[in-house]
Amino acid sequence: MSEAVLILGATSAIARATAAAFAARGAALYLASRDLDELERISADLHLRHGVEVRYGLFDAEATETHEAFLQAVIKAMPDLSGVVVAFGYLGDQQAARDFKLGAKVIASNFTGAASILSYCANYFEPLKHGFIIGISSVAGDRGRQSNYVYGAAKGALSLYLQGLRNRLFASGVRVITVKPGFVDTAMTFGLPGLFLVASPQAIGERIARALDKSADVVYLPWFWRYIMLIIQHIPEPIFKRLKL
Ligand SMILES: NC(=O)c1ccc[n+]([C@@H]2O[C@H](COP(=O)([O-])OP(=O)(O)OC[C@H]3O[C@@H](n4cnc5c(N)ncnc54)[C@H](OP(=O)(O)O)[C@@H]3O)[C@@H](O)[C@H]2O)c1
Image 1 (cartoon, rainbow, N blue to C red):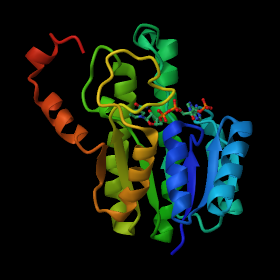
Image 2: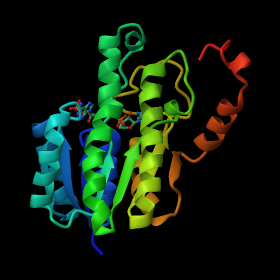
Image 3: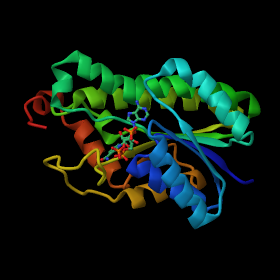
Image 4: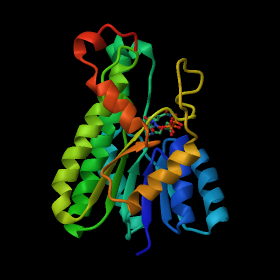
């Protein structure tokens, strides 16, 4: 069956690579984000390179009151919608931990907005008994660290939300995949100190699309982050709280 995929936060570097990987396997696309001009460029490029149908439209994760109508418009334009990729995210900076006005934006962009649009997507796919949802969370959500615990908390909440959604939608045959990238070379991480084992967005995007062909529910990207996080999660709290992480 041919795929028709909605990609939310489609101007992100990881999302672009994911869109290209889906287009390469012949999927029709609906790209959505806050930047219509950039979406127009990305859409034209993907159509030219892969000959697939690419539509695009405005989507703001924080404007949750618009999400229901947004999804209806997507379904009207692409009635054979078969899957959704939630790729938007906002790292914020250190200040987000000390100034809740900034922290609230991080939580709204990474968690509340995702929970909102995913609730409508889940309600759409559940009665159809097919479809997939891929949520891009982060290894940052696996353990709270002083350097980015507001972002980590929002991504951790997203991972839990996706886990619950997977449990709910299993009976209806709708797949829910949680993707947890480590460090990826994108605008989000540009100039950040202390990065290691940095992956390219292209490699991550290709693996996100390929996750559909495999059975894993939670995908660490690249794969070795599963083991790094296993070690990090098992450091006893009395030691962990003393670390400068
Ligand atoms: N880069 C990493 O090392 C890394 C690691 C783990 C997880 N991730 C996650 O991977 C995903 C993609 O990240 P990336 O590094 O490719 O990001 P990126 O290039 O910095 O792009 C972030 C994207 O999120 C969009 N966005 C932010 N707030 C939004 C909102 N309120 N509504 C709609 N779109 C919004 C931005 O759109 P605008 O252009 O409109 O601002 C942009 O397209 C994110 O969820 C991120 O948290 C990244």
